[in-house]
Amino acid sequence: MQIYTNKRKIFNDPVLGFISISSDLIFDLIEHSYFQRLRRISQTGLSCYVYAGATHTRFLHVLGCMHLMQMTFKVLRDKGAEISKEEEQAALIAILLHDIGHSPFSHALEAVLLDGVSHEKISLVLMNLLNEEFNGELSLAIKIFLNQYDRKFFHQLIAGQLDLDRLDYLKRDSFFTGVSEGNVNSERIITMMNVVNDELVIDGKGIYSIEKYLTSRMFMYWQVYFHKTSVAAELYLVEAIKRAKELVDKGIRLPSSENLQYFLQKKNPSLDKNEMDLFTQLDDADLISALKIWQNSEDRILSLLSRAIIQRKLPLSVIVSEPISEKNLQRATSETEKLYGIENGKYFVHQKKLEVLAYDYKNNPIKLLLKKNKIVNLQEVENQVFINYLKQKMERFHVCAPKELYTLFQRFL
Image (cartoon, rainbow, N blue to C red; front, top):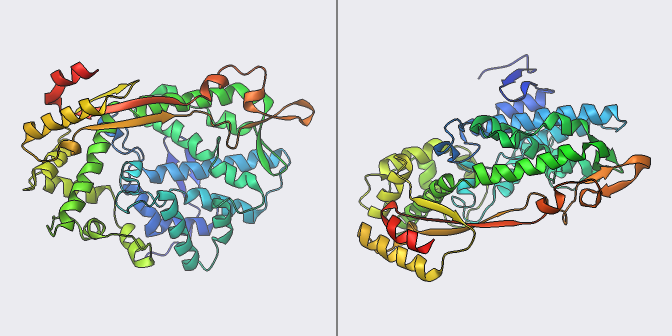
């Protein structure tokens, strides 16, 4: 076992610069196997199939979030906010661990490997396990994570309309994808943060930085997170796992790592320590290794789906403003069954609704601090430019099917 005497290490982040560790406890959490696994979890799923540089990890992201939290506390203290050392460490731990429960490829397999269980719930389970291991030292961090601490701004910095999670992933994902529209000025926004009555507010002069941030978020969804090709790849990845689970349920053993085999077989996850220990040994490599083998599966559906992902033989995909009728989708499904000689073409033909709400003004609106300590909601400020547009939900439909059906699909669109 390696023993560290100096735990005040520094990470060199290509996006935010040097990130320092502020306490021995935080160092020990970073060194824990639960956390180190995040080095092997892709931050943006299969977006690298479109943007080749998007190979960054959850590990980098959460370190960046912690760094932004450190910056924020310095700003807030300079403006008179009282933040104890205990509160600071707890908030840093809460944001450091907020993504620890992500499945392989992050959101791509959300609630798929563990049926219906979100990554937030798994994160909480893992935080509780770590709290036991570290003799209760994470108790306040968990209260902040759950929004059970009476000083609300700590939780707002972790999960809210203008949280540090978003400020990091927008800037980070913009950097690694090369999509400059998402490059938010996180430092400028942090300098505009303030606390009134233990709630997070933004100094009034920061209004246009906030609008730029919300606009950037909208563009990143349509250009990166909802890019038609990466959505199609992730849909096929989900279908491959679902097919594998169905085959295993029928008694067919598929070659894979022991950890993946467990979750292919498992129904009704227990989320106990033994299961979580297995889950935290599961990462992107387990899925890729299995898919490489499954390309040669005797099951044609699993074989085709696996090849589509491993060899990037992805389907025809489009994003349209109006949904395609069920009749036309069924026709495409039937043609797929003939094309591939299979009984169920629904694995390969999909229609998925995509929704983006850049600013949810009804739930936890962003508040501005104006002159004479007047606080107003962002959408109520007279000199705002884009808010009325950004608070409207945008809806599109992603449709995909085998490329061989191109001629047929042209008739539907």
